[in-house]
Length: 190
Image (cartoon, rainbow, N blue to C red; front, side, top):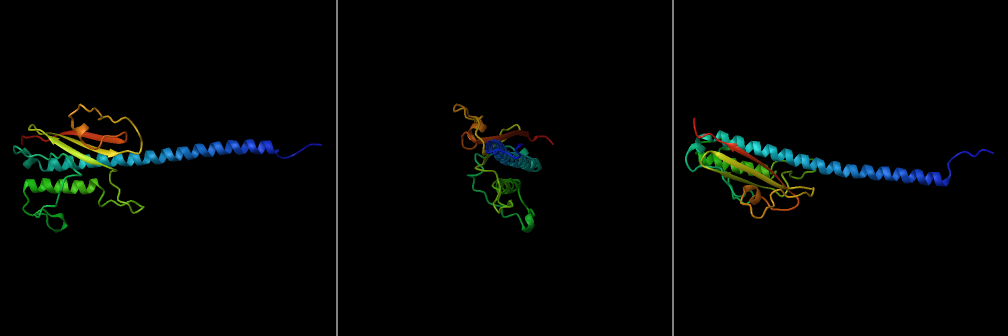
């Protein structure tokens, strides 16, 4: 007599193999979500670096004058307000270079914290636990550093306690800190 069908042992082994496969898929999904957040945060950081660099280039006339810079120790801790010379619709009315700088930093901070960017879930979506710092020297070189919280642990590249570099000082040191920095040059000549 020939028996047809599956035995209980075969069904249990097949179920076990299927369960392992589903667990693997769940793990991959978790990794994909973390990677997606990392990519979104890095893309936003790149966009913010470009934004402030372009704003500095546009205010080049004011930056050429001795002593003028966009230097800031902590964007998050800075108390920034929009200058009075900014009219309705964001129109500049008789603004000085200092007013333009103050407005640039005010608007940059707004973008930085995600004040006007709302995700599909209704949550403002700026950089997580972030800060930004800018240093400038008299030759026209500026160092811009963005620091934010990552969902993935890694070695903090700026953890050297003896360092006085802007990368070390900007943001809170942790195993989750990510940083992006750029050095830009604003020519002092025409």
